[in-house]
Structure formats: structure tokens, C-alpha cells
Length: 348
Image (cartoon, rainbow, N blue to C red; front, side, top):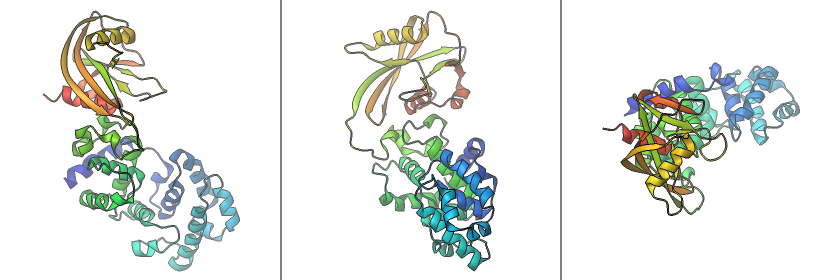
């Protein structure tokens, strides 16, 4: 399990990781800068601050000798100013006690201002490839889904999460592995609308198998609405029709099969005919029921009835509509329910 899990995750990361400036260096100081800035701040916000910081304080020596007020001014806009103050204090300790080199020993690093368990593990694993487990919000959510832990996302889950990650953490490329976990949580195993069809770890994910990934972690109290929908599988010469959702609203910009919700007192075949006419401007020639898929979203439970459909004419491709071969589905981000349909469609 350890080998296959880490291999799949690292292969995904090598192919899909974002081009971020702090990933172009192994210098512990720059990795330290990025990790402090990224606490409670989004990546897009941090990038320009990081770049300006690197010019203003290119080494830990430059930071340590700068006036504190100047440092705080450079931090202005990032908020949570104790991060900057602790960073400044720690930089002076590193210069005065460790000759400007961040120690590799986690015990020594934990004594520095601003270094909690997460920051210590993330900086040392990325900079020195130390095999240390990290747990941030993205990693916590991802592993809770892998283990199908239906609970609130808080530190009460961290002992179980740490035990699981200790089993799959590779001895080599630990830093890349940890970054891959965070990247997976940010880009694929998202809080809402996780992109399970492009996730290399879905074979390990109990929540994906159960269809409960969007209920984990437990969100704020809510009442689930039941929704009935019909889905059209339209095949032509080994290619399947998918279309892109609007750029605003639920599941924005994701790709899915044609179909939609049943209206009040509408039967499934009538809904299928109506949706195909409305979405594709063609007629339904015949349909064959295939299977049902049940999936949970944060505010509703959807029952998807899937039909193999033949049209009176096939629509042409355009920017929002594509005919896709079976092997190319993973190039198109899809809602979790659509990913389950693909799995079931090609499981035989």
C-alpha cells in the first residue's frame, strides 16, 4: 500500500503541481518564508508578497539586521502580524546561534518562535527531505475522506490521521509527498465539489466508494433535499458527449453528461426528452435504462438515473460541448457524481 499510494500521488504531483516561486528552491530560508506567509493566507495573495520579500531580504542575515518596523511594513496587508514578529525573532536566533543555517533537528526548530508542529514538519520535510508527517486543513480533509471519518475537521482527528500518514509516507521525497498532499487537497479533494474523476487516490478512498465525500468532514448543520435527475449517455463511434457547466453557480466550469432534474410530477423519460431538446436542440430517438447512482452534496442528496440514449442527429463539438473517448475522460474535471457514473459505466 505504502509504495503504490506514494507512487500514484507523486506521479500526479509531478504532472499537475502549480508553478509556485518557492518550489524553485531548496533553500530552507525561502521555504521558511513561504510557509509562514501561507499560514491563514491564500496562495494567490502570498505570491507577490513572497517575491517582494525575497528582493528586500534575500538572506536570513538581511532579515535579522533589518529594523522590526521595516519588516512589519513589508508584511503589511498579510495580516496576523505575530507571524512577522515571530519570524523576525526566529531569524535573529538562527543568525546568532546557528550561524544563519536553520537546524535540521525538529526538536531544535520547535524551540524557535513561530514553529508549531505543522510549520516544523513542512519546512524540514521540504527543505531537508525529513520524513515528517504534516497536517493542515487540506490534508486533514483529504485523509478524513480516505478513511471515511464522518466528523468535524478539528485536531481530535489528527492522531488517527498522523497514524495513517506515517504508514504511507515514503522515506525519499518526503517533502514532495507532503506538498503533493496539500496540492491534492487544494486542487482536487476540495471542500466543495471534489474532482474525484481525476484523483489518483480514489481507489484508496472509502468516502468515494460510499459516495459520502461531500459530507466529510461534517459541515455545519443543514437539511438535505432529495433531487431526482436523469442523465443521458450518448455514444458515437467510441466517443461520448459531455458538456461544460456555466462559469457561475453550482459546479461552475465542470464537465458532465447531458441531463437534469425532474420537474414536479414529471416522469423520467419525459424529463430525458425535455432536457435533451433544451440542452442539445435535438430529439431523443430511443433510450435504455442502465443504472442509478446516488450521490451526496452539501445541501442535497441526488438520485441520478442513467440512460443510454440514441438521438435523431448528433450535435457537433464546440467550446462547451465535446465528444470524448474513454481514455480522455480524465482530461476534463467533473463533479463527483459524474465520476461515479464513468466508473460504473466502464466497470464491466
